[in-house]
Image (cartoon, rainbow, N blue to C red):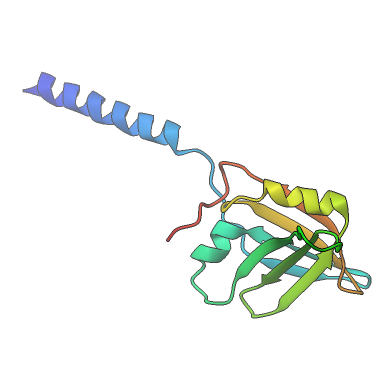
Length: 135
């Protein structure tokens, strides 16, 4: 009987060790809005915003492209933090427009807004440690 308990104990330990090895690093990144004199830095993950306990948080970017109009493609990035502060920016810069193709439903997004409301930087990071969006 002692041998059976030892075998069961080893089996349980091995199964738990296997689970921990597959768990991986995880992080929650809420929406933050950090103003300074000349720019405002905004960051957060889509999953953490969606999964937050509050009903305010959101972050994302939209791409506007036109086939029949001479207007250039443009982006709008936007965010609202847990306190309800909202900010958005727009840009037609080709590099920023191209960056939009990297966004997924689980992306980490940082964007920088200047005093005129233009997006000056966009950073997109897709990594396994960002919280996925839950239904």
